[in-house]
Length: 409
Image (tube, rainbow, N blue to C red):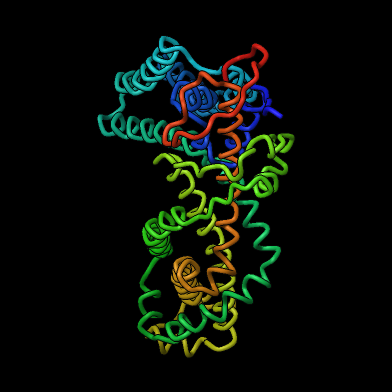
């Protein structure tokens, strides 16, 4: 029986990719077709704030009035967000003229505010700082939309809550190994002395350094893992992967009538999108383990490290936060950060740790790749004359059936 599907099904599957945080899996993912329309609500919010700021500067408003105008602009932008989002979803593609007009108007807005502020008495440093913030915010919005970072953030929060619910199981598996590595450092007097001299701002920078090392160390490893992910594209596997997706209604026997589908070669953007998913999940899991490790060392310090012991180790009277020396909290935080970094990297290398902590993350990637393969096959049937997705090898053609007139996907 020939495979039949509708363009609406293709669009629903593309929205599923966006909700999963993998928009790059959409075939022929383009700036005008997919990125810019979804950026419209964000750009409009920035424009509302800029217009209000521009108006208050031009009118000479200041102090409390300036703050109220800015707050009203933010509220107006947030109120308009749902309408703009619904509007952007109905636009399959912005024309070249519309796209350039939208971007040019946005650029003029970004430049008009600081130029007006210069006339109102702003310094050149303030002008430069505003432009840097505006450009960074725009670039950040582009990255958020291009790689689906907001859905990934929601997914990360959901996974963190699940990990916290299963915290006893997770900590029971991870803590014994981490304590074997970190317990010695807790009783090192030099570390206590160093923590005594560090402010909380520098402790935060140390944690960011650990996170950066974790990402850098994981990047190459994760790329190798994606290359080794098994793409089991048999009909029964495809049917299982497409459950609870828009493609669940498709008969996989029609999708793959001649046996397993050929694996799909990924583009650089798609590989990067999958790397972001893996890295985010790794960092969230490591953060939950780090919280447990930090709590353990705080409890151990309360039981073992008295005020006299802390004074002897740091060479001064410790600052107390209730019954707990403040340096104990810094020490536990830094050791937990180091332990989290070690856990994230070791869970991809050690065989047992990999099976317990990393394999479930790879299972999600395998599911996305299976849905992606079915989506491309269905898209070839619905849009037989559409250009092939970049990076996809030429495969066998399926019988097609004309679809009802509809908007392009």
